[in-house]
Every structure is written in structure tokens, then in C-alpha cells.
Amino acid sequence: MKKGQPLRIGIINDLHYDGRCEALNHLFGAVALLNRGLTDRLIVMGDLVNADSEMNALRLLHEVAALCNSFRGSVCYMPGNHDLDHLSKSLFFQALGCSNHESVFHQEEDEISLIGIDGNFSPDGSEYNHGNFSWKEAFIPDEQLAWLEERLAATQKSVVLFSHQRIDVSSHYSVCNHDAVRDVIRRSGKVKAVFQAHQHADDLQQIDGTTYYTLGAHLDDAGPAMVYAGDQSIRIDRDFQPLELS
Image 1 (cartoon, helix red, strand yellow):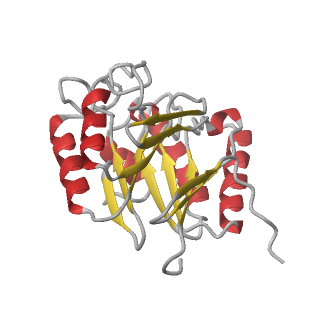
Image 2 (image 1 turned 45 degrees about the horizontal axis):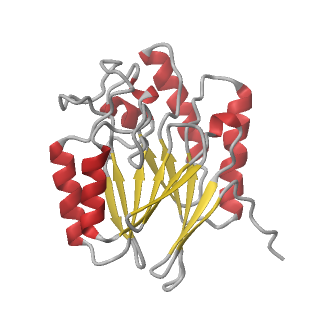
């Protein structure tokens, strides 16, 4: 990416891959489209697999990683609740070949700051781990809220935030303490856009100067999204189809 140009971020979410060939073909096509679009980053926003055992989950994640790693830029994986039905978060990242990754991230780019949060916790603060949770009771722990507030205070740039669960509305698909998360976002004044997954339906909300966009599911044949994030504007191209280059 040249300095002054917007960062091009590809998003794929809610694959729910269970071993079917059609799902892998769809993923192959999505990654190929993003490669043709000269995308800088790929963020895979959770619920990569639907497995029936730990070994099955590990195998399915290996297969997903083999395709996603054909992307020609950097790849960032986020866990979703389904990924943790039979795994811990550490096993999830190990299976994807990135054991040094954490479930939250903060990346400072030339024009923009990217932050990912993790709602895969129960209200008592325990991490989702091998199915020890109710997916309707997602939660952002106090320690992570403090981390988010610190990260927002530290950056001097506009921020794009990523979350598997919703934080814009009250629903089974949102973290239980969404009001507290949005309060941190509102007080920072820096988060221009939040991209969310999990509900399998596109939705758009404007709250306190921040745009919240929920993305439909790859499982339901949604194409990849492309986000163009610069210091002046943030734009999304849904069901991205790159222009043919002459």
C-alpha cells in the first residue's frame, strides 16, 4: 500500500465449514477475488468451522488455513463461538498455524488504526473453551474493556473496530454488556466504523457518530467484503467483485 492510499481490508465471516466441498470452493473463490483486488489485509471474522469433535475441528481448521494462506497479504483470524465448541482459543490458533496470535489485536497502519475485540467470554469472565458456554451470553470482560480504552487513548488515528458478536443492539447475537462497550467507543471519539458478524444478516446502524455494519454470512453465499479505510473516509464494498485490470 502506498502512503496516502486507503488500506484495503478484505473480510470473510461465518464460514461454518463442516467438510463439504461446496464450502471450500466458495472460500477458494472469495480469496481469489480478494487477491485480484490487490487487497492488503484479510480478516476472517469467526465461526470458521462447524465440527463434531476436537479432532474434526482441528482438521477442518487446517483445511481453511490452507486456502486462506493463499491470500497475498497478511491474514488475521478471529475466533467465533462455533470455533470453540470443541477447542480452546489456543488450540484454535495453533490449528491455523498462528499460535503466537491473540484473540484481541491492535494494528497501527499509515492512515488508520485497526482493533479487534473478543466477545467469547461468559458473564462470569470465563473464556469460551470446549463448549463450556451459552452462545447467547457473550461478554466483554472488564480487563478487555480497560485494554480497549487504553488502545483507543494511545492511537492518534481514526479507528476501525472488529467484533464477531454485535455490540450495536440488544439481541441474542450481541454481547451482554454492549452498552458498556459502546460507552468506551463513544467517549474515545475515534472509532469511525465497527464491523460485526455472527447474525448472518446485513444490517447498518449509526450510533453516536460511529457506523456499525453487520455482515451477512459466507455460509449463506455472501461474497467477501472490501473495506477501504483511510484517514478521511471509510467505505465498504459488499460482495466485492474486483474491476478487470487492463
